Image (cartoon, rainbow, N blue to C red; front, side):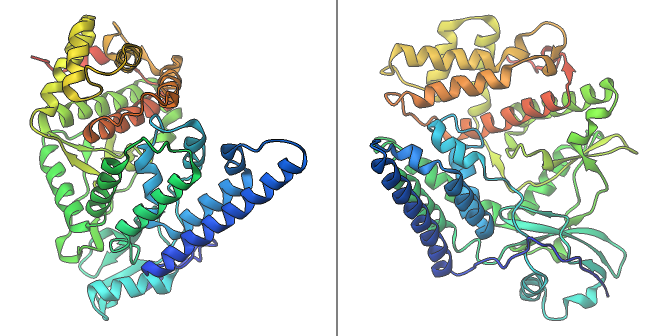
Length: 441
């Protein structure tokens, strides 16, 4: 077997035992606390009254937190993204600043750890099944990393390998990171984040089950069989386990590199993704909810979009799509009372919510649906929509008398929609979104 390995200067062994991971978090907390004490002492010596958030948000603390989580990977790295839902609209700006520094490009596993994981899943003589295997990953994220390989029977594969210890450390990682967030004082004691934490654990357990992800991969391949514009990699079940996912390798370039493509091609790509979002919500009842740009690639020869990473696939309750049909219809009709009723039925607020907060939520909804209500092509490159949504979310999140977590399904939908808007803006797309809206009734 041909082995290809280029040492990654950022590779590091993934701490896999619960005690080791807890110790890592403890070291991080101790270091942050020590930095805060020193900074507070300096401010007191200068006659100033230190503010907790100012002491926490120092460059040294931000670097310490993000580097340690990136080194640990797994749930510890992912939980901040899940709690903030990649937006931070429900969190104070100070906390969103720290979580926003954490990127998805984790350190890679060293070669010996990769070999150990594969031997545990495929057997000690797994190399005999391959003509070539590259130990230099082509991608590394919070849950696992991806390698390219070629089997003796000629299959060109992408092999996703889960970091050791990820699954068994999910509950403790989530609880420990949440405790650290509580200790900062940035999360108010009145905010019940238990539903978010439970959902984070559930979602992470699903993402850490590569056989379940393989099933989602197959399902989306079936659902999109009538859409030749999309390519979904084919599952190779004989090499797939809970910790290793084997799928066909599909050649492509990152979708964001198409910023230099002709306008018509960029518009077409965004139209395809918007239409896919509507199909996921209203037709499939199943959505890939991770909007990371890395999950979309493009094959220039075929002019087809490649869809990757179905670990964060979410099935919606039967009535969820119908509830959003009513909400969208009310928003597009400019019927504010009907929009309020639809929002309340979904659970964005209740009858006891202060009028000013109800108004703020409804304003955000109408803002988010601007592209749908626009006549003609909506120019995503010439709008401050994403920034306005972010600012409105921050203002609502800063209102401590409105700390309310809407239904979890809505957060995943917002996450996908926000990511799609960001990609459309990056590609400077112009799309007539109204023409893509399916019949709402």
